[in-house]
Structures are given as C-alpha cells and as structure tokens.
Length: 346
Ligand SMILES: *Cc1c(COP(=O)(O)O)cnc(C)c1O
Image (cartoon, rainbow, N blue to C red; front, side, top):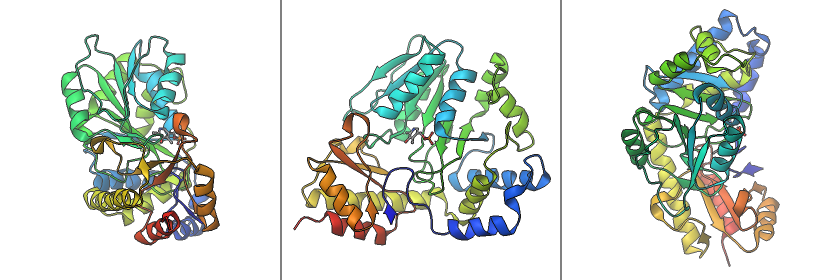
C-alpha cells in the first residue's frame, strides 16, 4: 500500500532498518536525562541545521506535534494579541485554539487564489501567524512574501506553520521567527514528534514574558534545551529516526529541486488529463500538496484503493469536492507512475 495522503503519509522505506537498529542498540529504553539520549538529540539537532540550512544561532525544540506548537506559541509568546492570516482549515484551527487561550486574537481571511498581502499592521500584533503550506487547500506562501511581512512588521514575531513543507522545499529561516512542523508529512517518518525552530529574538521575548505555568512553557523548554533535553520524556525513537533520516538526507536545495520537478510533472499530467485543479493561480500553488476538484471523489478513491494506493480526501470546506495528492520526498517517480496510471482517463 502506498499512501499519497498528505499526512500521515508514506514513510521512507529505510525506516524499517533504522527501527530495527534502534531496537538492537537498546535506544528504546534509554533515559531521557542520560548521556546516550543527549548524544542522539545533539546529533539530530546539528543534522537538522546542516541539511535544512537552519542558521546556527536558532534553537530547535522537540515537541509532540504541530498542534502542540500552536499551543506553546499561544501560552508562551502572546500576552494579549496575535493576528492570524489564513485561507484554509489549518490556519483557522490555529486561530480558534489561540482565541480560546487569548481572546483578543484577531483574524484576517484571504482567498485561496490571492497571494497573502504582506502589509504593515498598525497595532504591531505580538505574533503574526501564517500557514506557509496550507495542507487543506494546497496553497503556499513564498519566501519573498514572508520576508516582506517581516520587514513591514519588525516588532511582531512571525510564526510560520510549515507542517506539510518542512523537508521538501527550501525555507529562508531568517525571514521568520518561529517555524514548526510534525514529522509524519513531508519528513516521511512515523507520527508522534514535532519540531519547533526559533530565532534568537524569540528567546528575548520568552525571557521578558517569563510565562512558567505549563510543563511545555517555552521558558522551561529553553532551560532544558541548554543540555539538549526536553521538559518531559520525549519520543526517543522518533528523535532517533529523525537523526537517521537527516544523516541520509541530501541538502535541502537538492531536495527542493526534485520536489519542484515532481510537482511540475503532477500539474502537467493533471492538466493533460483535464482534471480541474482547486488552485487556479500558479503563483500560490503548493509544491508539496496538490488538490484536485472532483465530482466523483468516492469513485476516484476506491479505484486508487483497488490499486493499493491511498489518496487524500479533501479537507475542511473542500472535504467532499476535492482529493489531495502528497508530493513529499518519500514519494518516488515509480510511486507517481502507479498513481498516474490509476488516474489516467481512457
Ligand atoms: C497536519 C497539520 C497540522 C497538525 O499536525 P499534527 O501533527 O496533527 O499536530 C498543523 N498544521 C498543518 C498545516 C498541517 O498540515
């Protein structure tokens, strides 16, 4: 079975070997305060920085999921007001969870065929929250727009959800302040681990606010991360698998080239077969998730399933009118050909 669901998605085949190795090396039962754990954690973080081109002075944290990162940001980085600019279901959920914790949270909705407008916001919200790759509708925000948003709002921290793009495309981390993802999407690993990447200025804000009411208060997370540790017993196997995946990984620039090539192949194929793409504007179409409008979702899905392929449903507003195809690094050209054969109209 090959999963093209945009998360959880296909895991890299080498995960089988790496899991076995973790077991054989006794990694599964190690203490999270031990030097063995610190060694794995330190190596994993250094490899993430090297392969994904994350600046050295950024701090990376392990969390349990991207959803947890939404909550950590709301708890620890917002005193009163955040601004959420979104066009789809994940951006909206992020707003809703934040709004429950910080009732002054504001939202701006934009159309899926419009690029996000990186204007200056007069009241300088503490956090400006954006979803770089909106998994629900297959739109993405360019590095240039994120850069302009930061330039126009230097007093706000820009928080960027990259759950379904981290590991697949090159992100210019200096353009944002907080970036986060979970590993079961573009990183091709089993679910149960999130990572959060913070610029140096985030620590200043955390120290100034000193919010310490939660096990995952960012203040405590910084204290623990000085020794490459977490505030709670983390997913050690997940961290080990991430370390191994990063060891094997090419540099992100190379991976991005392949991702873009594969996405062009998908878009060309779908258009040649007269499929109707949900996103009409080329400038905002995602490279890592593709959404296709359809009137016979069940038929397409069951045909794929008969060929041992799991397609993504639509999501949120688009649940019954689209299907989605993940274009993650774990998806090979052979995998793509199999799905294209299934989708080919006779
Ligand atoms: C999947 C997804 C999430 C939630 O990820 P979890 O690992 O389930 O917490 C958040 N944001 C985006 C854009 C996603 O695609």
